[in-house]
Image 1 (cartoon, one colour):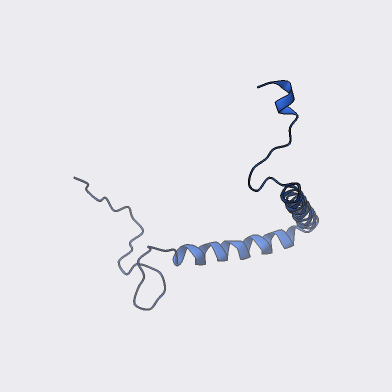
Image 2 (cartoon, rainbow, N blue to C red):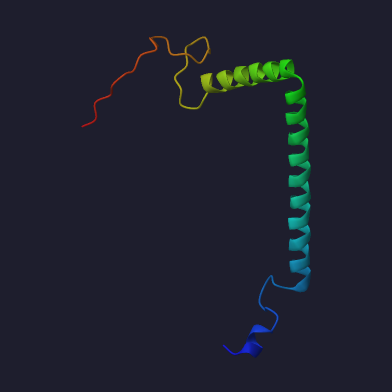
Length: 99
């Protein structure tokens, strides 16, 4: 390829100036949203550092949500009462032979 061919604008379907401009606008918008989310995360982190009781409360709430989510995870056997726990769960390890 010659140097002159590198200076030519790209051609083909979907590579119009308008399409490129719309793509750039979408990327810029997404970047702005990421920046706003990062700022919000930093604000929350700052509040947690300033108030340890709030951190404890938040961690407790997140722990409860995580426990509930794992109790009802897809594929996990459930009891008839819908509690999400196996009837004969003894908390031990069950070995499953594979042939």
